[in-house]
Length: 310
Image: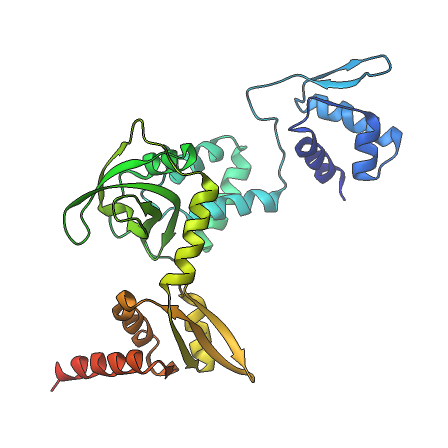
């Protein structure tokens, strides 16, 4: 390990400690006492606030700081950070107050002019394409806060019809241009997936006892086992494998049976339409093996499409 990398790792190793001994550094990084002493001096010069306390129970004491201890990155690591931020430019709405563009500008300004020019030049040659958000989701920060605080919330939801209900949100995720959250609905007594852009109002349920995180996990697992109760199996071509890997859902997996690739999994009768549309998107690279219900719905949808051109 290079010296600069070791110093960074030592900063990370010490970041959540209040005290340490020289032997801790020596054992963790397999270095000599002399090297450990030199490293501690350099860590101090880099901004790590500490002092020596002598005596039997002495050692190095770290002074608590509100700001992060500086971490130093090499050229490739800096480029990797800016490429990751560039890839997230498409997210016009996030659960955080600052956009990734603002964060990128702040980091960029902290670099020397020469390094700024190098990064700007390289990023002109690298492009990342993904699906931009279809609609703006205005409650992402409040949704994330409710998850962290384990709050029950009242929401107004307008995807199919106007409804008011009370839920407890389990997680937040982004898929194919849409922010979703999964949650337990106390009124319907069921688990559900909600599009965040259709949550038009969100208020904390005061005085209501929420479920624990463990309880929500148990409900989610039970739902997944019982809800997707119709097994399916579809054969793929080699290109179909690539299409599947580019886009798939939690209720399905890629499985090789006697070296033949298949999509297997389960769906609920309520999801028959979405399953049909998904399989049609794979074109000629998928063949439905079972169930008969899915195959018939698939054929019916294809006939409906063909009828538009006759």
